[in-house]
Amino acid sequence: MHIHILGICGTFMGGVAALAREAGHRVTGCDAGVYPPMSDQLRALGIDLIEGFGADQMALKPDHYVVGNVVSRARLADGTPKFPLMEAVLEAGAPYTSGPQWLSDHLLHTAQQSRHVLAVAGTHGKTTTTSMLAWILEHAGLQPGFLVGGVPLNFGVSARLGQQTSRTERPLFVIEADEYDTAFFDKRSKFVHYRPRTAVLNNLEFDHADIFDDLAAIERQFHHLVRTVPASGRVVVNAAPDSLQRVLRQGCWSEVAGFGLANASRTSSHGAAMAWQVQGPPEHFQVLHQGQVLTQVRWSIGGVHNQLNALAAIAAAQHVGVDPAVAAEALGLFHNVRRRMEVRGTLTRPGGSITVYDDFAHHPTAIATTVDGLRRQILPGERILAVFEPRSNTMKLGTMKSQLPESLVQADLAFCHSGGLDWDAAEALAPMGTRATVCASIPELVQTVVGQARAGDHVLCMSNGGFGGIHEQLLQALSV
Image 1 (tube, one colour):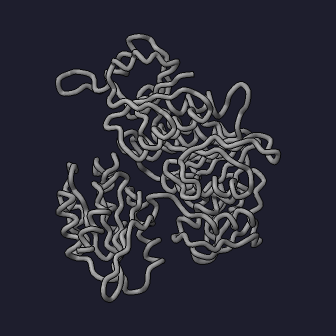
Image 2 (cartoon, one colour; image 1 turned 180 degrees about the horizontal axis):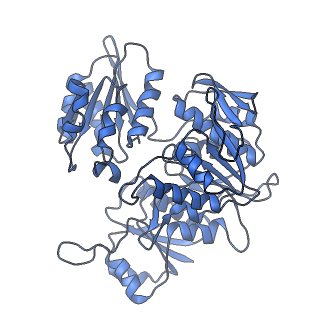
Image 3 (cartoon, one colour; image 1 turned 120 degrees about the vertical axis):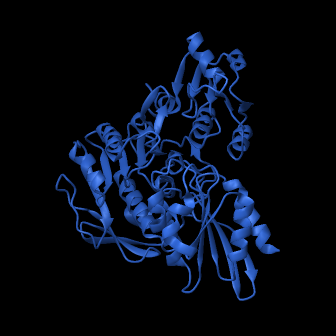
């Protein structure tokens, strides 16, 4: 069929486009400010991209319009529609659907074949854990399909269909299962469409204050996901968060595989022991099942959070027949994901070097775990300069501004870009005293950071957006 995708340059919708093209469909799409890297990837696949959401695109006459959640019924200041194409689709009664629904109906679960979907959900770590799981299955020779909200360095692409092998009953598909809403006409979380047989519930706390009133509202959506897992399926759940315990207490009809740290004592709400555990430092740790050491992981990835991400991936892969020792071997070859503690450059200075990193962290918990992970990797006496922008919808609302000082406690200095905020970042960061600096523009931010940086420093840039290209600007300014 011919599908026309509205909002095609978003990571998820771009992945849907790539999968649809690989499956043999004709794909076109549009977006505002058609932008790389997704625009470059899509054009390389032969997908025609159109700038803007003009109603004249109705002339394409696709079989389906696939609508991203960037699209709404919003009006501009003069009263005209922000998305004229969507208004024209509605007026014409033309067929339209959401990205997650189209993906489910035409690729994941068709009349001819239903894939074994392994869905990775959680407030944090979805992209990394999904990439780990896909790589484990690939290393094991299972040729999985996947759709990731980033680019796993082991694959170099964010999505592919994968192939059936003789070792599994169904073809495997690993997907990052986002709890954000599906579309303006479907306010359920995206993940309710995927119907997984293996579901990872990695963690759960309040986020997306723009669409959820409170944590209970997100827990309800996570339980909708649990409801879709068949009795023969497995729910791999972090045993520590009370929020996930509350989700399970609402009902679970599948095997529950709890996981966590070996020094924790926790059982699931169903009385199932925390079967999967890790012990040891993040760079070299043992994997235990039912108290027995199965294997060990030795890799270059840091952070306790990544230990738990790895453990969740190992437990999920075991559900489709991958031996934990094989999974551990795969993780030793795992190269992480772009924008996850990605080194953008290192400059040599007398007395030491200055390294600039790029990371996707934006929620206070993610910021804290990212800074902690870096702290564990660097030498004593070396400094962390945390450079961040509260860019997500939740952070722009100021819902979690009071948590920022605590999330940055392990940073030596913090630099906040306050452009576009309606709340006082300096006031929110006041508990940090002189360790925190607020700048209203990117040039000012770059100049301030460069003025404070010295040999041996680690400059950690954190944002869920492009951050105005600050990484290259810092590297250039620091090299002068």
